[in-house]
Structures are given as structure tokens and as C-alpha cells.
Image (cartoon, rainbow, N blue to C red; front, side, top):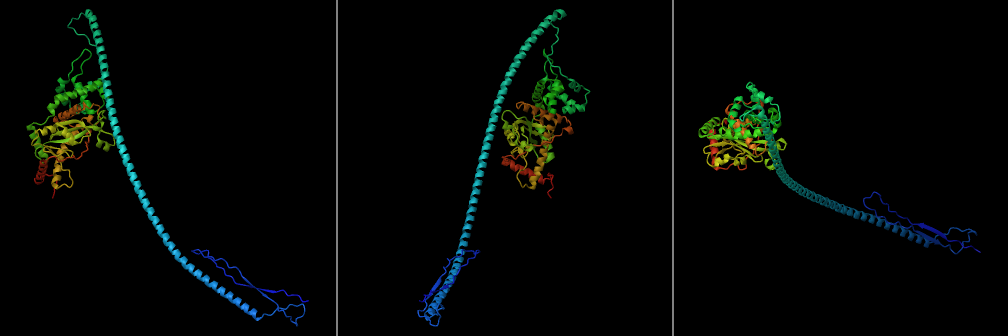
Length: 569
């Protein structure tokens, strides 16, 4: 029985393709899923007829017939066509994808750049708006801070003024109570002393046998103090130079003042003590004005009490104002004014100049009332130290002698306001200063009787020449005030005198200055004082069109009549 032969299986593998992607590609690669491997299984059946020439038990390889060849051909043809189709599709896909990816990449870059630029512009605009908002907020905060600071400053000034007024009133009330108590004690002590004195007299009369016309030894209720210095300096043989150094005047001038004030300052002796001599009274006052020493040192010098020295200074100053001021400080008469005009014209070439006017400041201790009115802002800014002052306005003649003074106005007032408050201004408005020029500085206004320099910029040669002549006349007033402050040292320091008494003391200094100048008292170089006062241009510097034309005429006259000190060629 013949065995059946097993079918022969022929496996044909079809080629497969992989799509490789580059990891460094700038755009994503399109990965196609891998193709499944296919295999064609062909089964050949052995022919049914046996080969008689083949031995038994051997299975020879069968021969392929025509159908098998045509089957293989069709199979390979299909396989090649599928392979070429897949390659072409793959290339088309790769080419199309690259073009699409490139176009897409270009579009994406453009969009990203536009978005980035728009974002930067928006950020810059937001930053600008934020900066503007911050600046506005900062300005608002600064304005609020300044307003708050000013409000607080005003409130503090108001509170300070109110407090000072309250304390001043309280102190004044306390002083009144103290004075009343002292008077009561003094009255009680006087009554006791009188009783003791009467009893002593009653006891001594029978023993001594003195009659009713005899005198009784007085009991001196005075503290013992050394008076050696005053006794030494009051001797006739005391050196004249040293005396002038102490009192800023010669002994003859001092004797003249004592003789003039004798009737006004002489006091009578009492049962309790002897009166202080006139010469010692005058010496205490002049020493205090000349040196500016505190009352404590004056007390030690003259062997007197501090309160006594203070009282003597005021008494003598009031006597100087009442007795000496009408004689030595007054407006010139017509004859004297004519001489003053001639002397000023000889110096400057300007006619009808009757005086030079200047305003200075005298430092004081901060007052208890109206502090802001006496606050000197310009001196404070220059010296970097809080300064309070009163003003002294003076008119001097060609020799530097005061002919008019206005004393005591607060230091915060400018020169033009001080002038308006003065008696000189009232005299001029009454028509008493006709045909007279009073030369002022840039702080005074130009009026029908006040001649001031040009203050506007870009001056002409004529105006420059005029200003130089005005400055020469002003130099006379400045020199007079410099001598005044150098001779009387109390004007250089913050005085201890009360405000209500200060005009009297300063007026006494001006009167004593005139006496010394009239008697040609020499100035020691050691007394030198550098005068410096801040000057500000008056707000309304021209108050008369007529005076403006007159000033221009004077300036033209100076230039064309060879009175100018400056050569303009």
C-alpha cells in the first residue's frame, strides 16, 4: 500500500519598509505605522500518477507545471506593484508634509513675533501708566505733607503765642503780687525803724543834753560792698586814656554830661541811707552802655546792688531823653540845613541833599509777646541762628550827626514800612521837607523827598554814575551807624532791657553819640565794628512820577557837568 506524501509548503516573504525620523528635525515627523509582514503560502500537490522509474520509498521533488509558473509570476508582479506604490505614496507624503510643515512653521514664527511685539508694547504702556500714577501719588502725598506741615507750624506758632501771652500775664500778675508784698514788708520795716529811732532819740537826749536842733546819727540799712574801683577811677589823677577806654569819652565830656543832668538825676538823702552821687549815677549808665556788660558785673564794679544799677541806667537814660535830646538831637534849622546842603553838594555834586538815611537792627532776647513780629528772618538765615531784633532808623548830616531817629519797630518790618511809621514821614507829608532830599538806599521808596539809587537791571552809564554818588552819601550814614555800634557795645549784644524801655536806652545812645561827634571825640581802633544789614528792594519802589523825572534830571546833570567819578570814554 503506498503512503501518502505530505504537501510541500513554500513561504515567500514580502519586503517591508520603515520610515526613519530624525530626532533633530525642526518640525514633528510623520510616523506611519509599520506594515505587517506578509507571507504567501503555496501548497503544491503531488501528481497522482506515480513515476515507474522512481524506486519505492523515495519522494523526489515534484516538477512545476505551467499553472504554477503563472501563479508565481502574478504573485511577484503584484508584490512589485504594491512596493512601488507604497514608495511613491511615501515620497508624496514626505514631500507634501515638508511643504506643509515649512509653510506652517513660517506662519507660526510670524504669529509668535507679532504676539511678542504686542506683549512688549502692552508692557511698556502699562509701565508708563504705573510710573505716571506713582508720580501723581507722590506729588499728592508731598502736597498733603507740605499742607500738613504748614498747618502744624501755624498751629504751633499760635499755641506758642498763646502760651507766651498766658505766661506773660501770669508773670506780670505774680510780679504785682510780689511788689505789693515787698511794699507791705518795707512799710512794716519802716514803721519799726521809726519807732526804734524815736525811742533811741528819747533815750539819748537826756544823757547828751542835745537840744531840739541837734542831729541824730542815722542807721545805714545798706549792704557793705567794695567801692574801691569807683573811688579810684573818680580821682582827678586817674589816667585820661584809661578813662576814655572805659567810658568811650574824655573826662571833660563826661563832666559836661554830669553838669547837664545834675538837676534831673540828683536825689536827696533819707533817714535810711545817703543818696548816690550824680557822677556815680551817670557813670553807671555810661559804663553799662559802653561795655554792654551784664548788670551783675556792673554791680561789682561800682559796689551797688544789681537792681539799683538797673534802676540807675533807666533813670539816667530817661533824663538824657528829656534834657539832652532837645539840645543835641534835633532837626536842623534853616541856617544849619543850608550848611548841610552845601556840604553834601561839595561831596556828591547833588543839590538840596539835607541828610542821609539808614536803618539798622539791634538784637534782643526773644520777647514774650508777638514773637513772630520781632523775628529777623534775614539775620537768622545769614547767621544760622535764631535772631530777634528791633529797628533803628536814623538821618544824619554831612558830619555823621543824627538829626532824626525812629526806634523800636519790630525787626520783621522792611525799611520802607519803618519809614512810613516814622515821625519823619509825617513831617514830610505835612509839607515841612520842601526842597530837601533825604538820600536812602534800595530798601526805601522813591518819593518827592526821598532820593534812592536805580535798582532795575541793565543800567546806563548815567544811572551808574548817579548810583555811585548816592552810595557816597549813603556812606556817611553807614559810617555814623558803625561808630554808634562800635562806641556803645550794648547795641552789639542781646540786651536785657525790656521792650517798653528799649527805645529810651537806644535813643540815649544816639544822643551820646552826637555829643561825642560834636566834641570830636576820637574813636579807638579797638572799638571797630563791621556794620552789615540786609537790604531788600522795596515792593513799591517808585511812588511819584515827578520824583522819577527829577532823579533822571539829576543823573543827567551829574554826567554832563563832570561830577561823575567814573570815566566813560
